[in-house]
Amino acid sequence: MRHAIIVTMMFGLACVPAVGQSAEEWRTLDLAGLAQAAEDMMTREEGETPEFQLLAVYCAERMTTASISDLATMDPSQLWRIVSVCQEDLTARQKSQLAASLRTAFFDDDLANLRSLDADQLRFVCSTFTTLGDAETLTATATEVAMTLVKVTQQECSTDSWTSRGELAGILRDVASREVLFSQVQRSDNGCIALAGLLARAYASTGELEVWRKTLEASATKASGDTKARLFMARAMADAVDGQPYLILRGKAWLDRSLGAARSAECRQMILALLVKGYIEAEHFDDASAILHSVSEQFSDSPDALRAMRAEIAAGREQATRRAEQFKRDEEAQLLRLQRESLNEQLEKAQADGDTARAAEIQESLNRLEASSQ
Image (cartoon, rainbow, N blue to C red; front, side, top):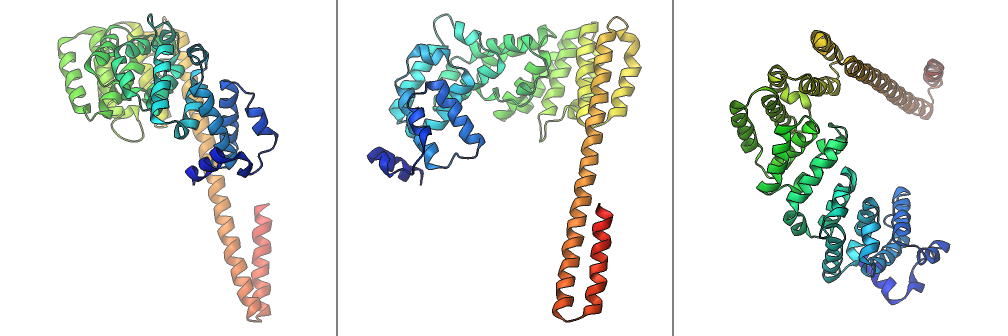
């Protein structure tokens, strides 16, 4: 169906169902504007319409004539969006040429553009190369991408969701890029959890998670203090990603060992925060509070951190309570609907049978049911 629509577009736009003023406006939009138009149509669930296919053609035409400077200055999320929209309308040669332009734009001589990206932007750039079928570029530059990951992870929350989902793990397939992250995991608490989670995802994506576990355990036997604690934490993350959904408490035994090995207050605080997050994730709020209470004296110099973790526990408990209440309301509504349907079916049968007494009895039951639901 998609190709039939494209052929119609190629040989006569007059055959395309009227698309109103939007089509004329699309001709005047720049790349960012086209990306936004595509996102708006997807939000309205119009991705299968002839209008959207026409927009895809415009996107393809504009992308193949875009300058390197235009590509380099585009927001990476919009870049990925527009490539995703028009990929079926690009020939293999056009995809190759576009990938080459993007390599020049982002992997320039001094890699300034690449290194200026934040975590989400980097993810979108990598996804764009993957969409274009140019995984070779990512493999060839994986070490530099890994170094950029270290930087952006240090700048952001160490348990940011983008790393736990592992959306960038697929590019970390060579030993050198993984070593960059592994070295940072052992060296610093800053971003350690996020990088350990990303490495675990990377090894899992290539079926090497057990190899990674053994590497971490062997490294931990030679380490001490905070380094040993970080290695135990990374070992916990390897268990956390081994199954769906991702669960921190799968690695609880290793987190306990990590907390015991840590020497600095900063490292203990990092591990404790991850353990508390795991309890919150599993809705074990009393356990989270208990472990905080048991170690509170160790954090007398950082009361703000303890207050923040207690606030997280309270917020998690409140969210869980709201979810439970909503679930109960949904169950009650479902039960009411089933009871109503059953009584209505019985009423119709009684009326069809001419059983007025039975029909009146059922109607009374319906009235009581409706009154109780008010």
